[in-house]
Length: 365
Image (spheres, rainbow, N blue to C red):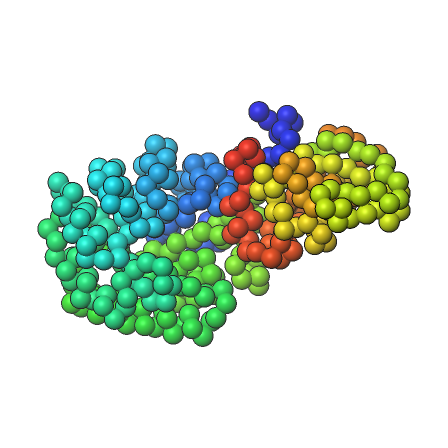
């Protein structure tokens, strides 16, 4: 199916992906670039994104074994599984040659038992995120035990920055603590392992030191977690749908469930062939959201429904059934950004792109 036959689709710009990878590279020098492609490439299509970035990155990061297997079938790059592995997944991780992230001695011992030879692991330290990793005051002691296991090879040591886009003071202090701990690691367990902690916000605002690897996620997709850096990135996704119906509605007509919008005057209303089942947030209902049609901002009317939304096209001449409508992206000199949708929906940009549904066809340009 091509865009010409689609009801709702997302156009993914490969050149924008590579531009954003170059923007990362400019900030990190010779450090390795780990492209985070979990959650279906942040909604952009994991395999398509990875293929576009294959020459620009050294390794990929995914959330789980299923994603790792899907990616391995397309590319030969090393793959780090960033989330914890379930016990039943560990043998397949070893057999697949993936790099698991571990947070406990018990995980390390289990991987050690399952490996016929060396298994590379990512040793995670919790410096403030609180979702996985060894607490930093226990990290060195645990690391010594894990590194001593006969079948364990430490690929990397990492942590995560929980407020790099919100609290610069805490982040700087966290990085100082992490750097001090890494110096102890290297002095007391002098192996050839790499270190990574910077994600997108860290790359943009805290890239001194860079360490050995950076994990670029959101910024690769052209969305900055820090608005002041948006100008150096190019949005990768344009999310589009079509006008399926146009009707002239009299004053006093109710629009959508709940009758939350009543036409204050005669209006020309277009029904779009997309809804919350495609990932368009229902929380945009009655929040002054807009869609672009023929380069004009058209207000969203009433509640978003499962498969359809309604917009006001009263001021647009020659609008027709079948016309493109831009849910997110640029048309002419107007733009509806992921940041705008997130603000109006009361969420974050990460959620806007990752919730774009499976029935929305990704078309790579």
